[in-house]
Image 1 (cartoon, rainbow, N blue to C red):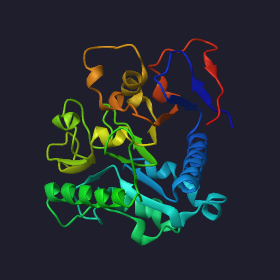
Image 2 (cartoon, one colour):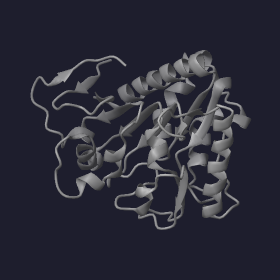
Image 3 (cartoon, rainbow, N blue to C red):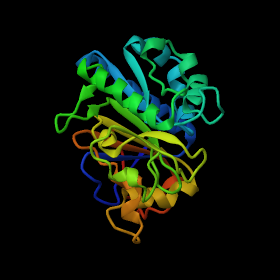
Image 4 (tube, one colour):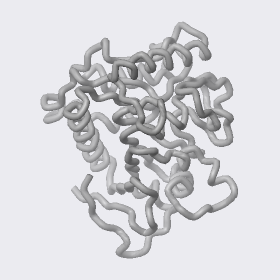
Length: 277
């Protein structure tokens, strides 16, 4: 399998760009990446705490449900969280939990007690408070790590997708939630995409993770990807793109992109190089 690393600009510190010719190549590499992070975390901490988002991400995790990963990974050490969730019932078509359960959790032997879904019986405000409380308790016993730089939780991996507007999790451009510094989990009631009520990790929590992976496919994401990964400010709106604000404090950021998603990024001939995770 061929994988390309974009090297046409000086990447941000601890940031890696991986570009793929096909969805299948991306899916294969993402599974190997998640497997390696999982194995390292279990060896170092005894746990693997991963936070997921919705959208197409779950479909890109499908290789983990197949051999060799379904047999070799220590699933008993996995702890599942959500970086964002829609304030709907768990069986609702818009539920990230439902999407993840049907596409991933039902196919691997992760313990039910290690799956931390968001309370769908509470108001969106109370659900956010409850979720932060649960995470704080897990940080106390170090099931979830703690950042060396602040008191934020340090998830072993946060897996995100990017919207065509540059949003990540449920953090949207120019939204006040982007400015929160002390909250770990917050809520919004005015999402520009339905449904309007959502719960989301804040930027400090996302940026405190040991590893962050952002997945983007398709030409509709190309402009947002360009603004997010380029060191050159292209237009006055680019600094407010949430994906551009994903900058790990102590961890590492990896972008998983297909060719269409980087079509706005100017790359000179011969400017690609190969690199291993």
